[in-house]
Image (cartoon, rainbow over all chains, first blue to last red; front, side, top):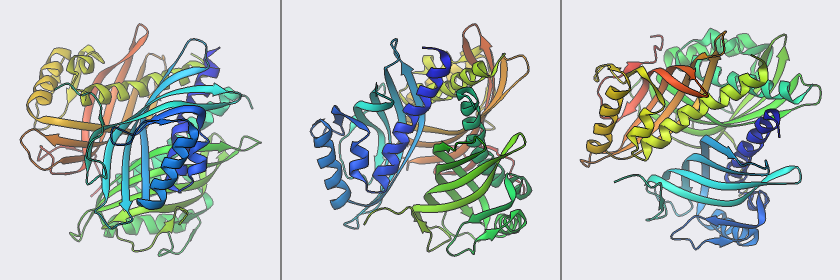
Amino acid sequence: MNRRDELADRVAITELFHAYAFHFDRNEPELVAALFADDATVDYGPEVPPLAGRAALLAQVTTGLRNVFAATSHHISNVSIDLAGDGDRATARAYLYAWHRYRDGSPDGYLWGQYHAEVARTGDDWRFMSLQLRAAGMQDFHRSTMHPIDRRA
Amino acid sequence: MNRRDELADRVAITELFHAYAFHFDRNEPELVAALFADDATVDYGPEVPPLAGRAALLAQVTTGLRNVFAATSHHISNVSIDLAGDGDRATARAYLYAWHRYRDGSPDGYLWGQYHAEVARTGDDWRFMSLQLRAAGMQDFHRSTMHPIDRRA
Amino acid sequence: MNRRDELADRVAITELFHAYAFHFDRNEPELVAALFADDATVDYGPEVPPLAGRAALLAQVTTGLRNVFAATSHHISNVSIDLAGDGDRATARAYLYAWHRYRDGSPDGYLWGQYHAEVARTGDDWRFMSLQLRAAGMQDFHRSTMHPIDRRA
C-alpha cells in the first residue's frame, strides 16, 4: 500500500465517524447500523450491556432515538487513525462533544468524550468492527456512569 | 483528475469553512465575503431572507457583526465532502458548534448546527456557491426559528 | 517536496494537536512535553509568564494537572496549516473548545479559543516550536484575562 492510498483511507475512516453522527442526529438508525460489520461489538456501557452484532446495535439505537432523544448533535473532532500493516484494518479514536435534548423535558445533556474504534475494510468500504464510548465528563446526561478515558488520578 | 488532487481539493474545501469561521470571529466581513462567488446564495433563514450575491452577504454580515455580536467562536467539525465528476464542483457539509456573546448583554447564545454548501473551483481557489445553515438545537440564541436538520420525527 | 508529502505532513501536524489534547486530558504531562522541541516557547498568558523550553512547560503542565484540574476535555477543530517553502517548517492554528472540571469544586470552566503554533520537522517527527493560546471567550474559566483573538472592535 502506498502513501496516497493511506491518505484516502484516512479520509474514508474519518467519514465513517461523520456518517455515524449525521445519521444518529437525523434519527436514521438503520443508516447508523449499516456503518458496522455484521458481527461488530459496541460498548456504550457500563450501564448498557455490550451490544454484539449489528442487529443488537440497531435495536438499541432505534429505541433510544425513539424514546429518549428529541434532538441530538454529535460533534466529532480530534480524529486519530493508526493504519495497521496490511492496510485493511485500523484503530481509530475521535473526540465527541455531544448535545442532547430529551423527550421528557429533562435539562439538555452534555457529553465530552471519546470514541475508540477498530475499523476494517470490506470490499470498497470501511466499517466499524468495534466501538467504545468513553467520557471525560458529562452534565445532565442520561447516564450516571460511563467508561472513563483513563485519566491518571 | 487523480486521487492526489482530490485529496488536495478536500483540504482546500475544508479550509474554506475554517476561513469563514476565522474571519467571522475576527469581525472581518469583507474577508468572509471574499470566500463566496459573486453570485453565491446564502440562507441563514427562515428569519433572514435568502441573500443573493456576495454584496448582499457582505451587508448582512457587516451589520450583524457590528450591531449584534460582541464576540463569537465558530467550531467547525464533521466536514464531509462529495467531489462531483468534473472535479470543479463539490457539495460539502460541516457541523457547527457556535458560541455567541451579545452586545446587548443577553445571555450567551449557543448553536449546534450544520452548514450545507455547494462549492466551486474558480481559478486556483475554491469558493462557496451556496451555503445554508441548519440547526439541530439552540440555547439563548438570537433566532427563534432556524432551518431544521430534517431529523425524522 | 511534492504534494503527496505535503498531505502526509498535514496529517502529522494535525495529529500533533490531537496528541497534545489526548495526553493533557489523560494527565500525562511528560507525553505532552514530548511533543515540543527542547527550546520551544509556550504562551498560555498573560497571567502565566511565557514558558521557555520543554522543561518549563513540563513543570507548568504537571502542576496544573495535579493541583487545578479534576478532568478536562480539549476539542480541537478548524486546523489550518501553512507549509513553508522548505517543507520542514509550518505555521498552524487550531480552534479549541475546552471543558474543565476543577478539583476545588468551582463551576465547570469553558474556553472557546485558538492555538497559534509554529511547528518544525525533527527527524521523522513534527514538534511544536511555539504555541500561543488565545481566547474568543470563556465562562467560569480559571483565568480572568487571556490573549485575545484580535477581533476588530
